[in-house]
Image (tube, rainbow, N blue to C red):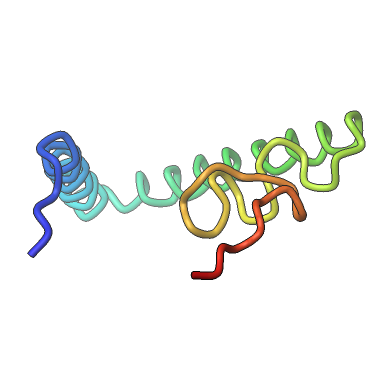
Length: 90
């Protein structure tokens, strides 16, 4: 069995408490849910817009976020295609 690091467990607890608190606030005031939805949509559009702008200015195909967002698909650092080392064969 793999045990998670203490910092990760603490972070997960904080995020969980925050999520539950936010859910309770939204249930109490549905108008806040609409405001939060608009806020997060605006934040996402702003991030995508900045990424596209940086991609256009620098000429890199995926801007600063990489092809699958920050960290790429597997959660690691993004790197352009073809820059990874070849697989090792035992």
